[in-house]
Length: 344
Image (cartoon, helix red, strand yellow):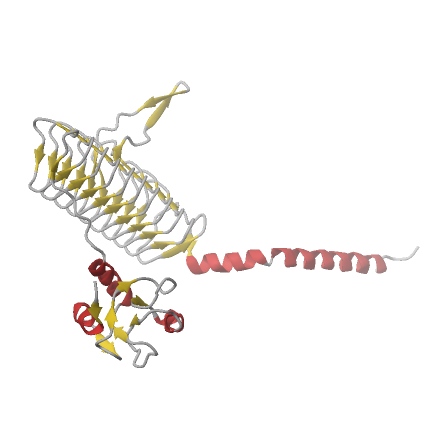
């Protein structure tokens, strides 16, 4: 595909700086950009973009003069994403049911679905229009999959679980596995039946090898627009609000309630049965163990307000120096005491 800078600016609702007739043939990051490519830069990366091989750059507001032809937009990252979609060919999927797929007689499939090789769809399942299910996926009994859903190869959706419209599940994702529920009697662990389900909202993305456990009773809930990275675990009866982020290896213990627009960074975790308010951010490896109010930024273990954690970390680095100072003071004090001893 080739587009002029003027045409791209019209798509993005941006303003051209420089040669509007310049032809762009590709979209990529600053490091990989070559002649013909357009890239993007936020303010701190503008010098790097100017020195790159890119033929043009998407720049933020406030940039009035740039060394390369540019398109000025309110949000360069969002504009870059839009151009990636424009320049990337859509993967065409043949619609229909592969002859090796096994589909229960009473399963209901919508229009224009694609069910690929070796998919198993159990009894009572409902699949919405235009949904695509890649090979070796399993949809359990009485599950409901919405419209325009994409299930990559090897996805498992257990019985009774629901996936909302326009959601994406990547390979190896498991929705509805049993929650980790046991009661110990006379030294032996007895399984507590996990009879609930998982309800995933619309436009949710679940990364490869992530697992969302079914509720003991009721539902484990994931709100609309939430994005879950690879290797994330949401335990039974967790409630997640809308538009949250869970980055790789995050783990949320059972019955935690998480508000809207919450971010758990990589390897962070959350205690069970606590409430996390809206708009909270937890830094990498942070672990809240009690309720956290809305609009908080926490770090550390146990997680605490980020500024407090920074002060603690700064003080911790001074401990060796403090130890040396204390030893020197003890030595000088001992010398002083020796000199002040009364003579016989």
